[in-house]
Length: 348
Image 1 (cartoon, helix red, strand yellow):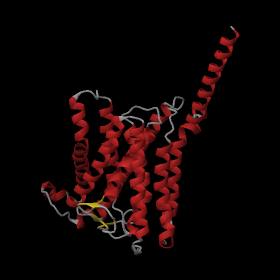
Image 2: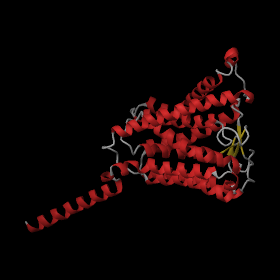
Image 3: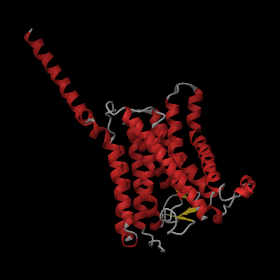
Image 4: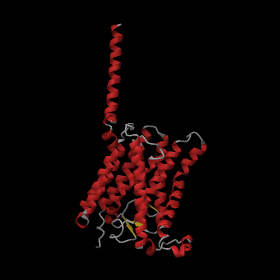
């Protein structure tokens, strides 16, 4: 069954650019207003990382390209994509910060949060004409290569892990600041290594008899190999193993602390990620994609429900520590104690 790309809708391109830009500005302004210099640096570093990885990937991999309909582009990469990466990765980190789990575990949850968004987003975006992959729309994940899904895992996990590691260091030291400045480049180097290892694992079974050719750098990838049915099978196997392992790690960590969640609910993170989910769900109907591929509606709704569950799970499992109620109760109690002291002082 063959699918077609919807005629590009300029309004949706502009809406996506505005969504990425406004979300990024809101997050940046909040951190500036809270005078959190480290968090400001993190969101800016993430934006730089987003642009570096997209520019590097489009020029090295040659497996996808962006539409020229985006207003602001840097080296043929829309600025909205770099900002979108920053917003998604940063909001995913804010989400996992709600859970009382070791910092080394949180990057796994961050990667899952982003992956669940991409499962519903990418298949819609390519049909809107935002970008184009080198495979037909009927192959792999509704026209999205499986390695892109793995790429989302590696991108978010790598940057999140590095940022959280830097948080454990002394910010006053010069080498810590240097590490922060270099973090976008360091993250990209590790990302390339991870994707290289993934490619070798998935291609080796197919090309086991002439494996030495894998050591030769080929600027333009061989699509006959990348999208061979046997290689596709191994990509699925590795992807399933990765996702299953990550889910198992996160569930175990959550279960261990089920009575001791953090109760800091980040409303901005929830709203921003929700808007991204809703944007692509609405786009399915606005563009008419639902007529050709209604399964994307089911996928989008399920991913949005999982997104909501991940945000509200601590409060469903232990409602006594809901942040809003907990904080309000604390404030009321504090005021009552203050009033009681005033009354006692006046009676003395």
